[in-house]
Length: 295
Image (cartoon, rainbow, N blue to C red):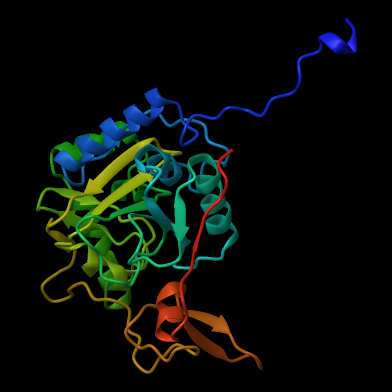
């Protein structure tokens, strides 16, 4: 065949949001089911996306299934806008949707996050999508998924209460950081993924919808707006957030936000706001938007 008969190369024609319409519809259906039964883990078919499972594939699938071309979205990793994970996911969503990305959580319609809820007050028209590594709080001590689901069905959380009790006996208090179990509407115990305890009160009666998705484990579960969320605890050893007494952000001076440690110059320990957008706003910086030309 001569060169004259070779068809010219063409750019790939991706569907809007990268995922095909059937996949997006199946994710939306799973989300609707999870909203109807707060805290219940809904199985779904986890599609392949161009990132490895364990790096936010579940959150990315939900974002790509719900986002529209006119939406603004924000993607953070442990509160930080500029980690490798956040930067690459933000760029990919922009390239396959043409939607506008923003650093400002107050301007965002969808917020995809790993391990942190934004400090800014949320609105009823916002959706917070959390990347999840381990969706089931019972899997600490029950390796069988079938048995764990049976325990959820029977509301049998005795082993989970025993885990909390053993922590009190060993340490004098409940020493659980990330993945602190919460009861949703008095029925299902939910694993809130690795968000700090500082953020758990934000889930209770929140005006926004929280969607949790584990792509590797193929599970979606939700906390709808105005839902009762109670961290587990005992009367004499109740749940409490992290003690940050005497700490302040080294950049903005905040004491009312969750602080992350860093190694200061000279070897000492310093503290910074985990939520970088919150820190920048306190310092009077403008939080910009950005767009990409769709592929």
